[in-house]
Image (cartoon, rainbow, N blue to C red):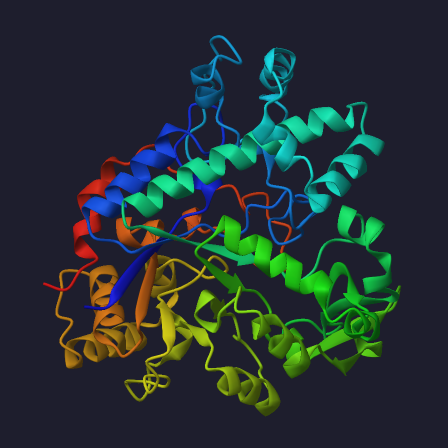
Length: 437
C-alpha cells in the first residue's frame, strides 16, 4: 500500500502557551498518526529564524520557541508555568522567556551537555545571538541544548511508533545571520538571491539573502554544504530540499538593484552531489527535492541523473479543461494536494468556476474517487495515483478554507506562518478519510 504522510508545522500544534512546541501535544499527534498507520510527519523548517521559517539564522540552531514548558517542569527546572489563551493563531512574543531564565538558573551541566556544546555551528549561533542581545553565550547554549534534547526525544518517540520525520532544508540564510557572519567566504555579498521578472512580479523577487560563492565552495570540496546535510539527517529521517533549481542554476541580482538587472549563474550541480554521496552518510533516498515552478531541462537532467524523489502538487497538475493529470507517469514522486504555500483544497475549490468545479468532480469520478466531498475525493486520488508517497495537510484532512492557509508567498500577510489547531478533536474524527476504502 502507498505510504502516507501528514503535513503540520510544529508551531501549528495545539498549545497552552501560545505556540506549538515539543511538548505533550506533539506526542499526542504522533500517537494519532501511528494509530492510523501514517508513515510520515512533515514539519517544515524548525531552524532558529529571522521571522520567516525559510530564513534560518543558523542551520544548526533550533527555534527556541519550540521548547516545551511542560517538559521543563517535568525535569524540575521550573515550577508552574501559567497558561495563556490562544485560539487558531500563534502568539509570537517573549512570553516563555521568564521561564527559560528560571530554568537556566536551576540547570546543572552534564556530560551530555558538554558534548553537545562542542558543536561548532551551535557555538557560532550562540556567539552571534549574544553579541546582539544582553544575554550570555552560555544562556543561548543552554537553550539550544534543551530544545535539541527535547526534539531528539520526540523524534525517537515518533520513530518508535513507526512515524518518520520529514524536515525542510531552506535554500539561503538571511543577510543578517550567524551563517553569513562566520562563514563569509562562502557567500557573495555583491549579489542577492531572487527571481527574474514574470507575469506576477514585474521587477522580479528579492529574497533578502546573499547568493553562495560557488568558487570558494568548490575549493573546500563543498564541506560547508555537506556538513549541513549530515547534521540534518541527525534531526530528521528525510530532508525536503528547498529550491532544487538553485543547485543547477540560481538567479543573482546586483545588490540594491531590481530583478531586471539579474542573471542566472551555474550552481554547485553534479560536483556537489557526487561529493555529498561519496561517503555513504547521505543517501539519495534520504532526500525529497522541491523542483516546482519554471524548471529548465538541465535541472530535470540533474534530477534524473541521481533518481531523486520529487514533489508534485495536485492543484497544479490537474488539467481541468481536458480532465487528466498532466504528471501521472512517474512513481518516484511525493504527491500533495497543496503544500504550505498553496491554498487549502476547499479554498482552492471555492475559487474555481462552476464549469471547473464540475470538471473536477468528473475527473475524480473517472478515477474511481466517488466520495462525499471534494476533499475526500482528492485525498483518495492521491492514494490511487502512481506517486509512492501521499502527504496531506491537517487543514485538508479536516476540510478547512483559506483562512487556515499556512503562507501566501510574496505577501506580508499578518496571518502567514501563524495558523494553529485548538485541539485534535476534529482531526481525530476525519483522519480516517485519508485512506483507501
